[in-house]
Length: 80
Image 1 (cartoon, rainbow, N blue to C red):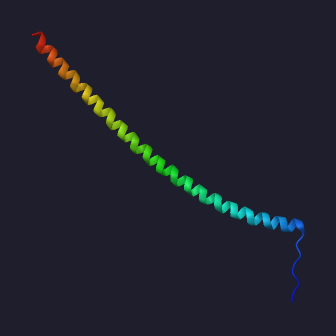
Image 2: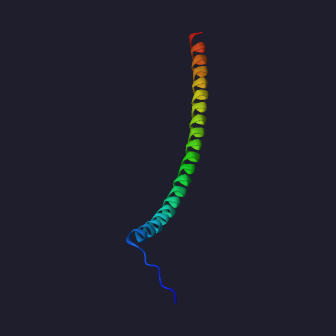
Image 3: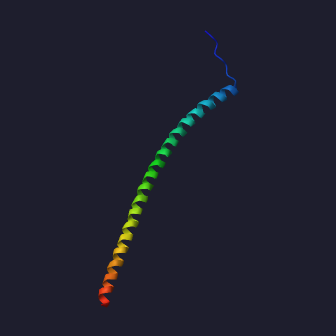
């Protein structure tokens, strides 16, 4: 039976650090995937909200125009 290789403390520390580092990188990779997914969802929501606000601004402009036209018509017929 071959003899087991005896690791020095430095070799053992490097090997243990490599295992911990790869585990840490795997966890960080999963976190990054979740962050990217969340950011994409937020971008979609912001785009939708921006479209809704733009539509609201258009409706306000139309209502102001109609109100002005009605007020002008009432003023015109009242002073005659």
